[in-house]
Length: 276
Image (cartoon, rainbow, N blue to C red):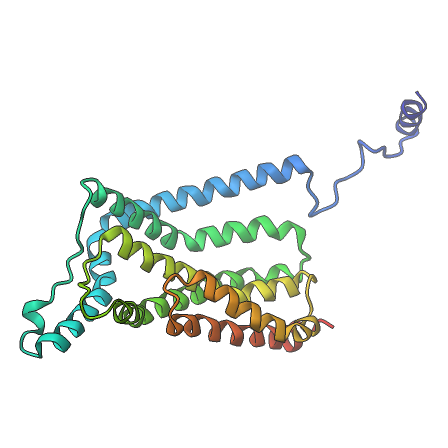
């Protein structure tokens, strides 16, 4: 009763009550946050679906490019075993289908991966727009650099994974011995390759994440310096876990750039963001 009386008295006197207080710019209620999240997720899903349709149409040329590492390894093995003249005649890089529905399932999976790749600019933009209301005006200027750098680093990481994949196949083939013939199914082969491309692409987002944590004031470059030794060990341990092949070439190809990115994040925080 006392609370109701005070609100009624304040309203009668023309003073703003709790219900009449203006909402501070950049602040939203929990329901508004959930509604905003739903809208962003719906837009991202629609973009991925549209990208998947394009990926379904481009499935053939994309798979031909993804199978190139397999062809290189098969030709190298045939050349080593049968000589230069018989290399082409005895090597084939056709993927073997052992399940009647595997052709359809692998096409849908590849189309989904391509859809995510094509929609990545929209997904990152929606993510940034969801985070933006909680940032200050001087922090919102990082929107375009955030999206562009994320796209560039993801493309570099995926490209590096594709470039090192023949070395990975060579290592795995050598481990199996000379009496093992390489006959890969689309699910196993493309599943391994796309996983590595995603792992490298996400791993190359490391400096973006560290930089944005510094922009938000959660981390500082001084703290990153103090964590440097532990961070290097953690990077190598995580890379050893997430790289499915387990070969040293793939491990170093991902771990070394991530360690360099860690140093770049420190330099960005120290000289560009100028946070203490």
